[in-house]
Amino acid sequence: MEASLRWLVETTLWELWKDGRQAKCVVRLRTDAFEVAVVYEGLRMVTRDCSRQRDVRHVAAEERRAWESYGWAAAS
Image (cartoon, rainbow, N blue to C red):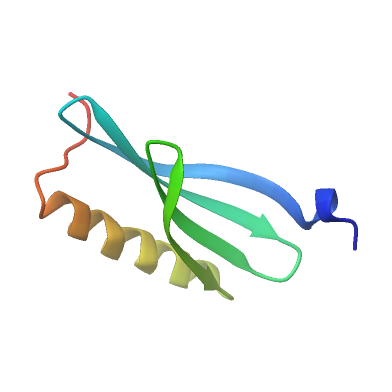
């Protein structure tokens, strides 16, 4: 498969902020699975593959709780 076709869709699930810095969770729908990634200041920090949509929600919620425990919060 051509590399440019491997990634079909990317969606932001949440964004958190701390001291003017941004972290966000994105999910990419691939042809074979979902990729969940936490992006901090443009750099992918955590990446996990999920085969089921419900696993995507679980991973995203788990990552959000972890970042929030360090003082990150949604923009108000």
